[in-house]
Amino acid sequence: MLSWLTGQYLHSTYAEYLSLNQALQKGDTAMDQVIVWMMQNPKLHRQYFETALFQGLDQLAKPIPELNAFFSTVQALPDWVNKVKIEQALNFTHRLGINNGFILRDLSLMSSYLYPEFN
Image (cartoon, rainbow, N blue to C red; front, side, top):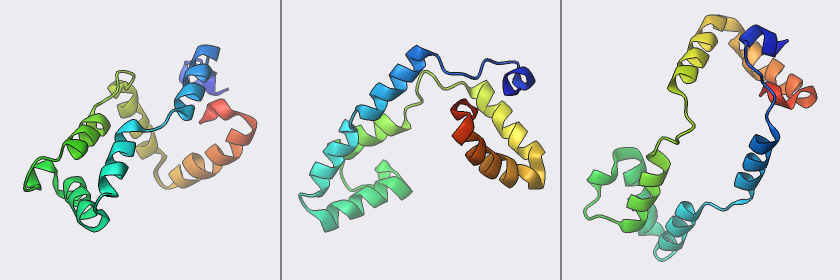
């Protein structure tokens, strides 16, 4: 029914499934490097990390390569992001109004047990 309503095929392909499965088995090398760096001086390095996170890298007294590498990785927009679909999804959630909690939280959760592609 969702495929008909949206005009899209909602089931993942086997290649998409394998890609997701492999991605879930990978580590996060950028964050691993931050953790190694942070554990060298946890109190001070956590402050640096939080400054970079909440205020920006330019607020640090000096460049920190581990943080520069991490934030450049997480701030990069992946190739697969479709901005048009994101806008459509935002418009859809706004149109739900007060019902968005029921539809997006409850219905999604319960339906996902029967139809994983719904999510």
